[in-house]
Image (cartoon, rainbow, N blue to C red; front, side, top):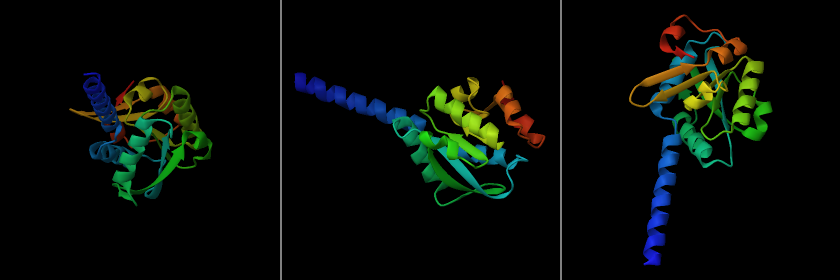
Length: 177
C-alpha cells in the first residue's frame, strides 16, 4: 500500500512539474506579437538583431522558457523588420548584455529582473517578457501574454526610464499601467 501511495505521489508531482514547465514556455503567438512590437521600435534598427535571453540556470521554469525560445528562434527568427539571433545570458552575466532586446524568462528573482531592467535602461534596450507580473512590479518595460486573448502590457514608469521611442501605432497595441 505504501509503495502504491509513493508511486502515485511521484507521478502526481512529475505531472505538476511538467505542467509548470509547459506554462513557462513562450509560445509562437507570443513570439510573433513581440516581433511585431519590436518592428515599431525606433531604437532597434531593421536587419539582424541580437535577442538576448536572460535566464537563471538554477530555475527549471527559466531553463524551460529558454529552451522554448531556442526552439522558436533557432538559427534565426524572421520578424517583420528584423532577423533575431538568440544570445543566452545567464543571470550572473547580465552586465555583459550589449543588445537592444533583453528578454526575461520565467523564474527570475525580483533582484535579477531589476538588474536586467537597469541594463536595458543603460543600453536604451527594450526589456520584454511573457511573465506579466514582472511588468506589473515595474521590473520590465513590456509583457506579452497570449492565452485566451492577447494581453500586451507596458509599465509606464519603466518605459519612461528607458527613453525608448516607438511609432504611434505602438500606443494602440498596448495597455499602459
